[in-house]
Figure 1 (cartoon, rainbow, N blue to C red):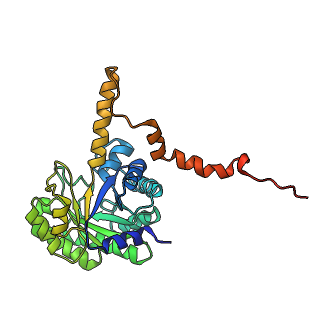
Figure 2 (figure 1 turned 90 degrees about the vertical axis):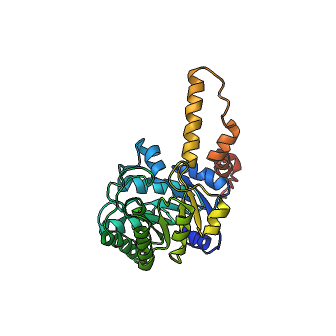
Figure 3 (figure 1 turned 120 degrees about the vertical axis):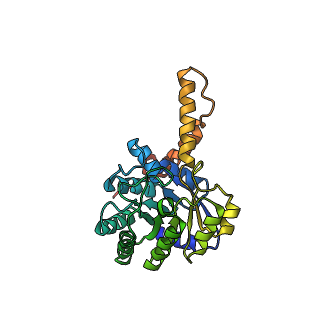
Length: 294
């Protein structure tokens, strides 16, 4: 049987861009798969918001993150990339994080070079560790993979914000040299910078498109022409869901008709009620044939 990591490797081997809506919980991941997208990502921003109702500022623990990743990966059959943040400690913690995310069912895990506690890549106040510490994190992540964790390593640098694009590219090139499978240079500020990023190495690159963020929201055609292999949309689903919920709560408070609700039958089907009932039929007494043992 093909593993999640093998599924992701096969996607990355295709010379094309893959659109990746990001999930913040198991239900949103199911909707991504039902919509026909080939992969998803557990957004740290959305996971923190949905699980603990708090901003993505390093408040979730390693155990909470792995548990959340396991729930999401278990709800879908498409490969899911997990957000491993800074690895939750030193290089040995990074190894544990990578192994834990692999056992949770993640196809890949993202490890970044921010100072702990980390911050969302498009919010103020973020800083990165020195080069050698950043390199040690990726060395440790690759070592965990080489020691048997069936998972890809997505290496992220946030150095563009504080030190400029040249430093970010230096780090990305070294990450690739150390064995990272996918590269992610966060928050480039122009199409020209994005082209420079993709030209800097032979690795598959991921673009992170945050509506209202620092990176240009380019069309998929342009992103593919630039050379990106994955286009991640980390906040699109959560933002749409939150807006719909706020509007519906306002309508409910004013005793107005709730005009944007999903049909109850469709809601049950998408959650999985219909599949559950169909599969459970074989276990009902009416479906069994009881034979006389004599």
